[in-house]
Length: 356
Image (cartoon, rainbow, N blue to C red; front, side, top):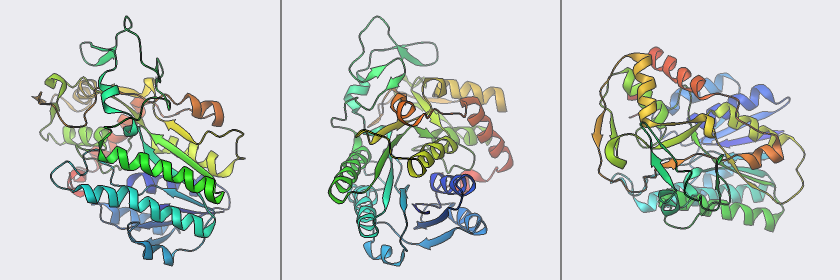
């Protein structure tokens, strides 16, 4: 079996490449990357040493796909991963669409021409911002929690947000491009009889992530705390009560491997939440407390100004993935945080390399 990974020199792409190569017998892993992300050159060198075939190319450029050989599966991990893309004053709306939607079109056209299946890595940020902001939450000492005296909306349970939760606009330009890519992938699968899987991922985190304040927040926060860089809680009263769940790419790889190597399950379900779940969730305030215990006290500033696209709580309910693929995350939150902390101690230059 041959597998092509787009964005292979990024944190997620390179992690998946290593896991698939080590865990799937007889697989050949190839990859394409534009190498525009700071730090990606480091991963290119390491992947080449593993015997992975690498191609320099940009998914936004259709002609760059002409050099790529035929494969059995494509894992689309190429994206600009910040929810603020197009609204951050540094990137434009056109760039958001070109990176995350038109790039997906080129990937799908390649799959159509090569008769390849596709695993599209999507995001928890396809879910409706107004609906997430309206969740029946209350403030605890250090996080938002559900107010059990108020009813929960459809698509939300004690396990988190499910695939049936609203995806109504606004969801951010980033979320809109990912949701549109999902729809196109399903249509290509139906029209051209291609196997398609879509994984809506929680916040991916682990050692070696090129974290910034806009994405990869767990890695960025721990590295910044270790280096005594300025940190602040933004929005929602400036107390860091926002909650997210963390997913290790090793666990994502387990899901992907089951999708590309196992028999196709019965039924028409193609979209799955893949996240750390309630046990793998933490607020920024709790993350700050953990970092204080791990590295020593470090003050955190407060800015209660509202930010565009920010939401108070997203925890992924992955019950569907468990039901169909027997998948649950195996890497505990504490293990993820400690792994990042050890990497921060070993690589004090990491924020500079990551362009944070």
